[in-house]
Image (cartoon, rainbow, N blue to C red; front, side):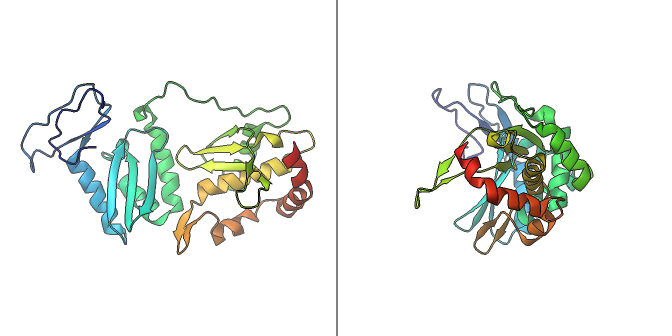
Length: 268
């Protein structure tokens, strides 16, 4: 992205992705639009205004980038003492209440703000750039129906408020570089896609439904209680997460089953 708002024409070998349009009050000159039909035009004044709101609430300087990325609608990281945030352009003209929720989510990992932003993104889904190849969500397995389990857990523990997606994932196992031990991740949650992935090894006749439901419940909690930044880095399971996890009806039973059968899960 060019730093100079009066962007020079880009070479044909470098197609434009984002072009900032200057605020004509501050810079009354014409922007030079490069060839190639850039995907997104960003009003610099609106970007700076949102960046100022983030800066006012942040203990560190903020650098805000605007994207047209369907995969990563909101993302942020701390680099060299600077909070670098990347948000979808739909938030530039969002209502003040939504921008406030965005600030609270990025700075504080606020749970209520996360839910509010999820609803707003759903309402603005028409503004998300469509990809030519989107992986199909698969919820019905040979043994377990993830969507049915998700709906039951959602109603029982979240009053139907979780608007995430769910799918069977890919069969992946990893070796730890230090010990060489094989590990398996039974579930994951992508906060940007709002997508829960469940490892397909759980789609077995000998894996009880309550255990699959426990893994789904755990990943749904990641949607409700976002990760936050602690003194030693990102905290995926803060105390309130662990406390809420115990609400699951078969919590102790699920932990006991996993401990007893983890070896079998690794072998299949």
